[in-house]
Image (tube, rainbow over all chains, first blue to last red; front, side):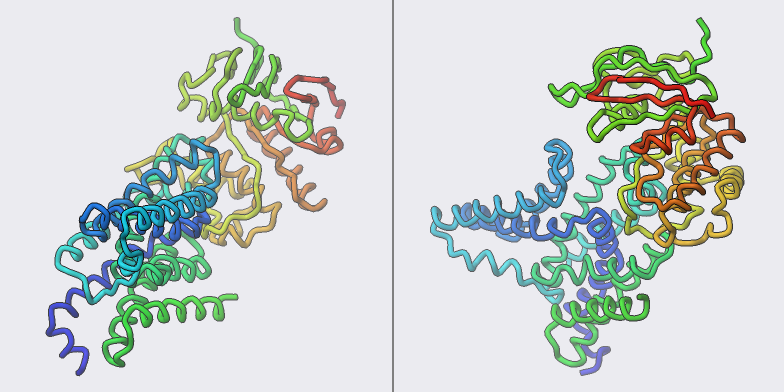
Length: 266
Length: 232
């Protein structure tokens, strides 16, 4: 089947639209992760999702909904907690991660829930996107874009020098915490699109490649978005044509872009 | 009563929780004066700056800027128009931003802010200051490519674009080689004369303080230990 034949099916149409929107917008939050050195946040929030999924299963609810809600709640508290406890956000990440996974296993044991049921949450695929998921991804994408457009100058200064931003009167910590919350939501979306174990391909790799190449913030935003779209959409189309697994192909496309950025821009 | 003080600290007490960092610090900086604050790590130097800038609360005492009481958040906008702050540099960041943008953003909150974009005037002032600190020729360059000395001159430029009357410098020469230090000193001397600035500089380096400042204040365990006038 050619790509055009595939695109006659609604699931592929939804996957293509989802990959363009998510690739172009969710990737922008990778900049937040790289600049604030929050690589542990992804794992921390994923494990928080696991705890949410466990709670969902114990109470007979939909584990994915519980997982996404707990990721959202976790990301809401991430920044304020690290400020309050005067701990590095990376350390708070480690605290969240270990604490939530221990609680999840305690729940599995006490409620007799099979742990593997929850781990299945971690294997998403863009081909399973429903119309509702697409609406959610679109709204999230618009919010991310608007945030970057409206707060362009302020975010730029916060990324460059958060202390200076605060001194000039920008509510730097509040804006950073807002970005962390959006990052949390995006991690939830990424779990659904590529599966939790491959979320870096959607959120992190494009930003990492773009940060190496860009000379200023405008270039950084445009290149991150572009690399994000090439990663998700290119990976999706490639996997359709060559009958490869979608998540793995999307991830490999992201890895190739990052490798190219390292080779061509030493 | 009108004085000639750019900055007046009266019996300042500052604390982190129950731990008192500054004990009754009294210090006056005259208009146009260059004062260096020397002290070991943990002596309370940066805390003092943060108190002046209202980034940390003052427990007791008061701070006056040009005879106007600014203690604990009285008219922060005005305070920001009077003081330029150059924070300590903790290694180079990983964020791509041009020299011009990094300087221009120092004017945030003056003629542009949330929904207002920088004006022609903002850009003109930025160009002028970049000439003064000798970075104009690399204004489109990515800040990550600058040397340590250039980064510090850029930080000073970002403070200067607000046209302040007082400049607070937190260890500006740390991690710099001798040549970059000399260049930076020259820049600081030039801007001091050109803009009639009062300057307060935190440093570890006594000989550097003696070279550039009018007066040296030693801070030890949160108290002023000695004050020495320097004859230039």
